[in-house]
Length: 90
Image 1: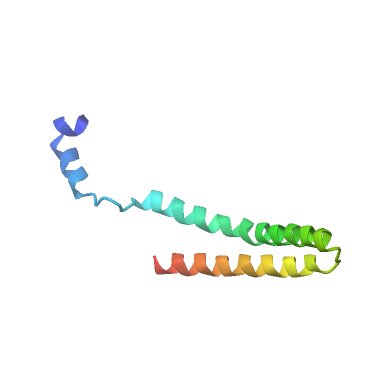
Image 2: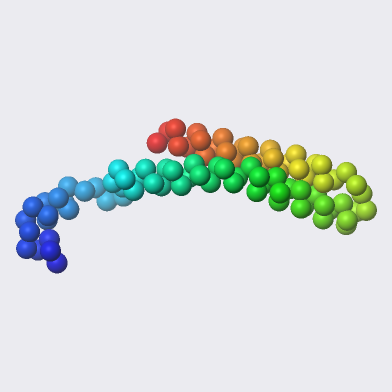
């Protein structure tokens, strides 16, 4: 409603491109994406370990959890590299 009465505000709103974020919001979104990397590798490793332990109990083995750990850590690193490469393109 204020844009109807203030011509400068109305012109400023027209200049903004839809889909583009302002500098501060864009910086916060980028920071949030990078903060997720701090939890990515431990979380994916934990998920791989839990899946490995479950498979160990299912198949009565004692080595599958190691494969689960390695698979989870590898998946975490792959996702981390994807996120970093995506952020460097922007």
